[in-house]
Image (cartoon, rainbow, N blue to C red):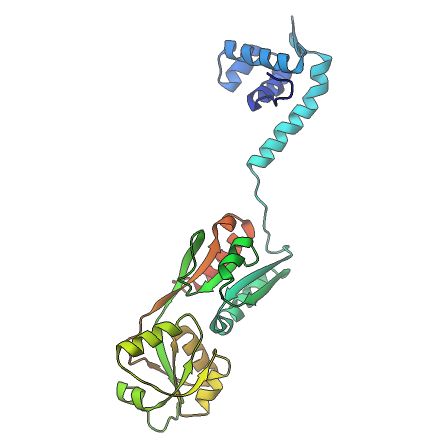
Length: 301
C-alpha cells in the first residue's frame, strides 16, 4: 500500500476493534471474517503505518505507543463516517427560519394561499412564504433552487421534475344572482347570447378556447381581464357571465354571493399538481412543504 493511499474502512474497523478486545480471534468473530483474513488485514495496516501496532503478550495483543496515539483519530474518522452515512439535514417546522418560494397562478393566490398561510403560521412561525408567477423561467428556477414548488396545471415542465396530483378541476360559470334573464339553469342558448368576461391568462385558458372553437361558439366578450383580480365584483355588479375553473369559481362566488352554474359547454378538465426538481426530492424542508400541500389540498380533501 502506498504511503499516500488512504487505508480501507475495514482496516480502520479492525484497528478500532482490536484495540478494545486485544484478540485476533475475537475480532475475526465479530467482523464475520476468518482469522487468516484478519491477520492479512493487520499486516496491511502495519505496513501502511510502518509500525507493528499490536504486540502479542500473555495478556493478549498489546498496543504499541503508536497505536495508543492513533486510536483517537481512528475513532473520530469512524464516527464521522457514521454521521455521514446517516446524514439528513433536519427540518423542524416549529424552529425553522427559512423562506419557501412557490410559483403559482393568481387564481391560487385566492384559492390556496390563504389556507396555506394560516397553516404555515400555526406550524412554522419562522417560515416565510413568497408567491411568484409561473413563466418561462419556472423550470430553471426549480432546478437552481430559486423556487421550491410549482403548483398548478403546468404540462410543459420538462425532465427532472417530479409531480404529484392534488385535485382535479372542471368548469363552471358565474353570474349575478339577480341576473335579469337567467333562471336556475344556464343553458347553451343564453351562454351564446349573454355578454361575457373573458380571462385571457392562466394555464386553463387554452382549454376553454379550444372547447369554444370545437363547439363553434363565438362568445360576446364585453371585457377581457388578464387574471381574476376584480372579477367577483364585476360579475356582482353587472349582467355578465364568466367561465372559469371550479375551485376559483366557487371561491369567488362565496365571497361575492354569486350564482354558480354548470358550464353548458363541454370543456376538458385538468389536474392541479405540485411540481419539484429531482435535486430537492429528498431535502427535508421541501418534503415538509410538499406534505403540507397534500394535507391541505389532496384529493381526499
